[in-house]
Length: 264
Image (cartoon, rainbow, N blue to C red; front, side, top):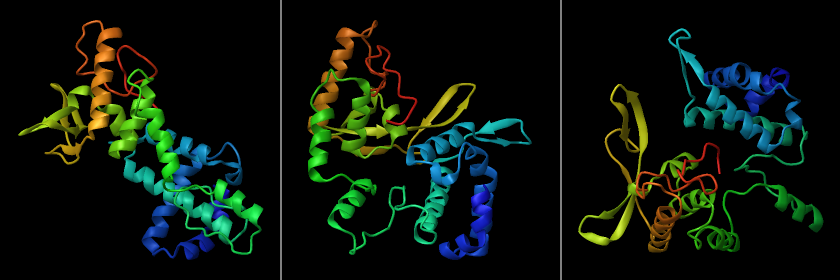
């Protein structure tokens, strides 16, 4: 990444990083990010381009045990790489004025009080925000929380919006992961699970930590929508009528309710 090498000293000062952090970020840029950022100049990349690069890096993984096996990068590492790209973009905006505004979610850039009304509106439209306003949230609710026959991608969004799940978590939720609370049969929780490891006896399943599920209370309206969806799948698409082990989120109206491979 020629851009990083050109601005390395200035970027380290801008980031106020200690030497070990400088070394880590340099390794990230040159050895992990640079090989995937060679299609065009850094400043020609859009946010969607950066996210595609990060997804590709995570999927490609890295070699372990002297190249004997490949391991996917963790979400934490991908988050660090995203922070590296964000800081480079902010540096180019604030120090070099190479962009009008930083592309990344969570940017701390403030609107300039000297901007005209038209410029301010444009900046507000293009600056990415961390959350939706109440009207936007209502539109999401109306789109994904009312129709049990909707396409499966919308159920993934419903799970993320209503329960705060990550994309990978929402795509993995099965109908059987929703269980009643002991002693309160009319109240239900979602058991958020993850795959810990695969061995000769199959996949060992655990929770947010290695020995416990993460339990999330399910609002009654979402629970009723999911039960209606389960019955809809059972009646129209499932051959064996047993849908409890199918994922709730799926692509379109796949009868198998295969979980989504790509981010929603």
